Length: 101
Image 1 (cartoon, rainbow, N blue to C red):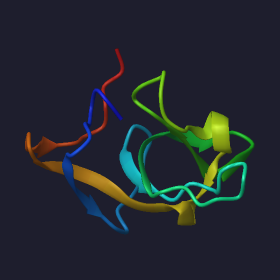
Image 2: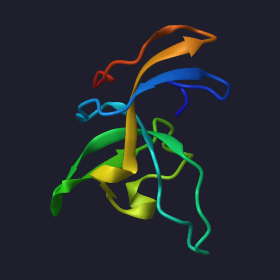
Image 3: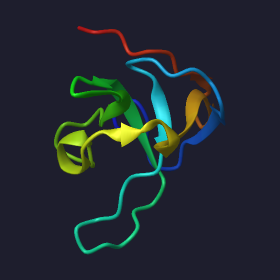
């Protein structure tokens, strides 16, 4: 999620929070192609899946790195564990919705 987040950042996440496009969220991604589980990940909500509006498309802030919905497809609502609301350490700050350029 660089440049927004960096390895070692400590985040505050809220379960049950409403989710909207551009939110940073904690998700459970589907297994990799070998069937092995992936770790819990932090992703950006890109929006609803146009073919299945009950599902979410996720993205990475770094287009050169990370797993996105282009790799794993859209995610069920139950795969979204929590919305990240703040970075606690080392650079405290609220994580609002990223503004579009």
